[in-house]
Length: 260
Ligand SMILES: [Ca+2]
Ligand SMILES: [Ca+2]
Image 1 (cartoon, rainbow, N blue to C red):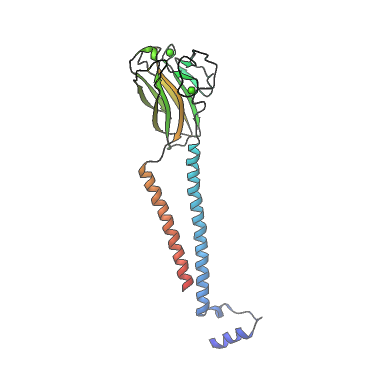
Image 2 (cartoon, helix red, strand yellow):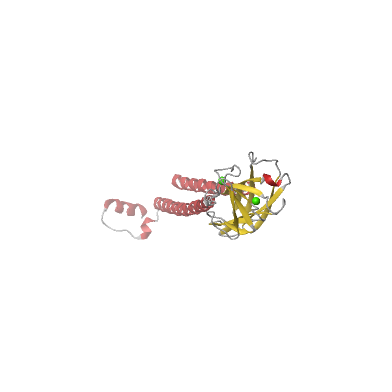
């Protein structure tokens, strides 16, 4: 009976077949293979979607990297001349920055800046602070605030302390080198914070550790998305390992289906 049907199929080019006629071992193999290929393509599409999602996540991390401090070196603003000018709260004439409390000195030629020709004494003729709103931060992302600090040498040797705030968290910093107006001995600082919202206020403040008028000096402020902790890297590597393993397993399934 089966042989008759196959002979009929071979002898006829135009007649159509009932579905049952295809259910012979050879056809089952072909259908299985086609289903398997279709399944793999579907899984491939899902994998592509997954990889795209992962790529987008990295895109967000890259976008976070792009956040920067406006006028972090304080080079843009009113001309402080060969000495300095004092700016009171709530002055916002230094591009990107606002004096929030007390006063600060905007230093020109009075002492050498760490970068460019201008810097800040965080205590003007009173203890001061200044801030900037950083837009586009990602909640949960760690950021490192980098800056250079020194002190107003006119206040003598006493230790200068101040604070840095970012996203509502405040951390202290201290400077104690014996510097002079001709040799400021600027030192680099890095403090890491975790953003809690889509914008974060970055601020620097003197705390009056050397009286009213001789504060910590500040220059060359920058911001960078902090590198993930080792545990986070481990999780990411495990994730990529699982994706790789899944792809290999699917390739093997397809190869087996083709070989069957
Ligand atoms: Ca500068
Ligand atoms: Ca001062």
